[in-house]
Amino acid sequence: MKNTALTNLHTALGAKMVPFAGFNMPVQYSGINDEHETVRTGVGMFDVSHMGEFILKGEKALDLIQKISSNDASKLYDGKVQYAYIPNEDGGIVDDFLTYKIDDTTYLLVVNASNIEKDWNWISKYNTYGVEMKDISDKTSLFAVQGPKAADALQGLTEIDLAPMGYYSFQKGVFAGVENVLVSATGYTGAGGFEIYVDNEHAEQVWNAIMEAGAQYGIKPIGLGARDTLRLEMGFCLYGNDIDDTTSPLEAGLGWVTKFTKDFVNSENLKAEKEKGLTQKLVGFEMIDRGIPRHDYDIVDAQGNKIGRVTSGTQSPSLKKSVGLGYVDTAFAKDGTEIFISIRNQAIKAVVKKPPFVK
Image (cartoon, rainbow, N blue to C red; front, side, top):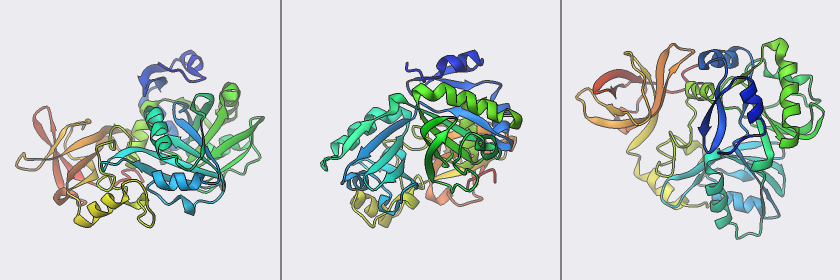
């Protein structure tokens, strides 16, 4: 089990620690509902240092990214971030990830914790371009400061002008007295906020400075439990739950980051799949009757025929009702369609609803 640079600090704060993606991670501190509400209405901070970071450097760095990425990274400019997925050769997804363009020959890729080694090996396999690759995951800490009060809480710590920072952009600068800190605005909660990338040696200093600066705004440490409920209220995919090596990115609704204007791994097969038409789609749904949908529960029609499966589900703290994501046959994918979740052999009524569930 790997630790982040702040594992001891989380334990001292009374966090409940659990194994997650090979790391010892805080799942909750004061309780998931309280932490969820803190992020939705104020500001909270997650330690997400388990995420992976790769630096790709060289004249052909963009060529390598274009080959392994579904999206068109040539559209990036310095200081811009792009969401994409890494397609495999069998119609599935190696991972979903972010590309940060630092300059014309330098890119930062941010990947999921559970896939660091897999992604590294996959990208290396396609690196016939002589691109210099560096895995900086083990020496990089990452904090996500999320919520409507995030900019106010952080602004006193940096000269980077945070409030006007565009969604999916980033800047580097001095932060909490530490030089060369990368601050971005991507977010995984739908509540707004920033990500702070810092070397492990400065992690505790930066964490403490943020907690101190955010105290007047009611900042709290937030665990992975609330991170999951927050992302689910927005309908954001989680790798390993909603997408994986076996799921079609087009069925997962990732057509918007699939750019057939260029050649990438398995692009011809994905193009053919799109032209042929999809048999399933990932949809959001809200429960009408009481019951919490869980990963891998069957989705059935009114007659009890299986039409799909749940990939993520939770009791939404904001809505006070259960919501979920799941794959269904395309005939049942339309907004407002009545479906049923099979919970302990009972068909519990739900309705298809396009996320985000919380506006």
